[in-house]
Amino acid sequence: MDVLLRGERLAQGSLRFGNLKGQPKFRDQVTALVAAGRTSRPVRHFHLIEIAKAHPMKALCWHGTNDIRCENVPDPKIEDGRDVIIKVTSCAICGSDLHLMDGLMPTMKSGDILGHEFMGEVVETGSSHTKFRKGDRIVVPFNINCGECRQCKLGNYSVCQRSNRNAAMAAAEFGFTTAGLFGYSHLTGGYSGGQAEYVRVPMADVAPMKVPDGMADEEVLFLTDIFPTGY
Ligand SMILES: [Zn+2]
Ligand SMILES: [Zn+2]
Image (cartoon, rainbow, N blue to C red; front, side, top):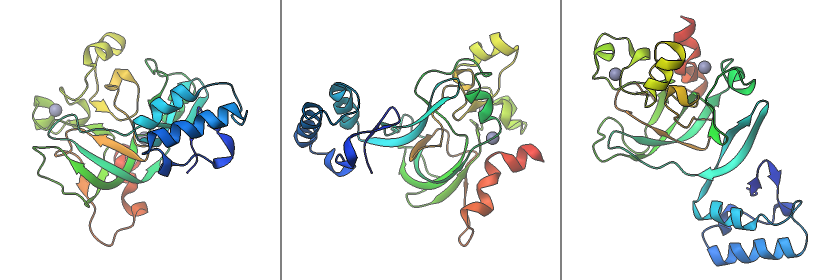
């Protein structure tokens, strides 16, 4: 894949992910391209090198009203023992994503990764995670549930009292708070979404489900949001 910076193709595909591991080689390439005037904008190579250090993946990032870009961003990391990281095999764009694109939903920040309807293969598990193993295919509901709070115990997962890291902000804005949601502003916890090559799934031992063998992505992807919320 070519290196993209802010949605912009850089220099005729001559920089590839395969080169990013060798930092000196990559730096030399960028410097040479800049010197030869083959970047379409002036010197951004410092920023590029910073991105390269973080082993970039591609993701759809929000940058403002009607400004969504496919960019290289750092890979997600395990942050808690209950987490898993998945390699996304399918994701969907929701009608609700339009409210992010058109600026209706407040508290988006430049660079936020979108997407709350996704599924994929587990590639990493947290230290205390026991539900899934590497290689499992899982489908991930859009809301994040702790499984332990009063509302989760009552089965009211969409209003989990613990998964929204910014619950106080949401309560001040709306008078109530939802659970933490993937890719849906900082009012819902500021979690990176799944319109990306990889995504961190917090509290992954509660809501995500293993996909039975023999079922195609298209047969289960809508369990992430459209099917249950429509029902
Ligand atoms: Zn949705
Ligand atoms: Zn909960």
